[in-house]
Image (cartoon, rainbow, N blue to C red; front, side, top):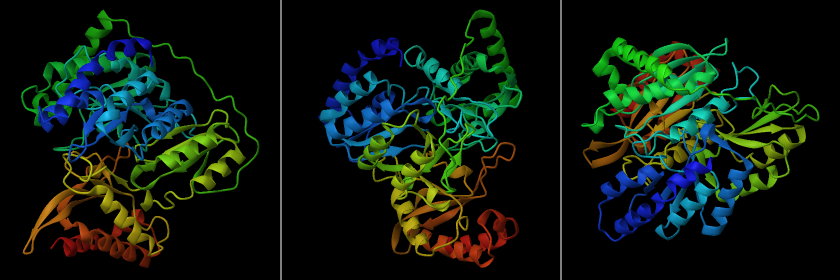
Length: 513
């Protein structure tokens, strides 16, 4: 990270220390502290005794140097819990206030500035995790995501946003980063340009984005980002936080009005500013050493005889001990680094055949089926605004389903959010759950509203339909019964659902009655 940002942001830490001290002394409320601390990428956890720190890393690039810092910090401060997020960042949890400020300063000096990691600021910029190494990618978007991430840091202290702004890049129709659902998404095209989508978002009243520009030259992305900043600040709702996200611009301006306002801002910026990028490609120079045996978690790269190893700790919860073992392994592996995924997993990229085998062995404790790659936010046991305990539900579901030994694909990846904020992206999953409370004759019970039918694939985007509340304790049984229905047809869920939607609806009705 450029030294300019470190010089600019370090003085802010003194106020952060003061606010943290005031919060723990009871001098300011939880809400007041949350409104301030989010701008530093930190929130107090439920109960107010410990904290979380979110480290921003554009495109989810967890380099060896960054991982080394995390490992050193875990040992120095006895940190136990790491969480991979759906925005490709890494959260350090259960931090006592006595270490929070020191750790934050050290992270910033190590190049992971958390400023703007929460609150009403530009958030971590996302990119397709295998960008640059994927065989069928349209083109490598990672350099542009990193440039965008650095550029957006300039606005953290210079511009007041109505709410947060999420920017991402996609280089495949799989749309892993949900570029067509974000505040600003750049979608790669075969002619090496981007289509630009704006004012999308999940959470309350979700909407897909609108294509506001086409054929944007990659070297011009900063013009398009600045145009979105101008539109958001000019037309965003500063009065009502519930309507302060960019997706509500579709409501106030309409699709045509939003596109017109965006193009007008874009034209003005082209006339008045010089924001063109000059990015030189840095191809992977490492050579492979032979072919690796087939493994479902092993992906051949476009670089000959190099591989990426997929690893998904359940729910993205990564122990510091496991992170240390991975670091010890990749320390001596030339060009190997970690790419965090938007589904709370990771790829270890640029491995030769032997390195890939070593990493496969070390990561065999991770997800082994599509269902086990399911996504869950940190949940109500940690998050102050959480309603449902997402992590506990996912753990219970994985444990129950494993006993059935279903073939891979029998159940889809599920997405679990503890509240309507959709951190678990429940609204674009084939099956999703959102935390709530169900009133029963015996009293209120933890429950989750079920969502079904979502799809993030580019050109086939669908927001899931909301169903009724299902008791949290019943959800593992629901999934087992669903899996048995699919398995009885000797097929996978994605094929089964095409002709059995009525069966799914009936099963949902049974468990939500």
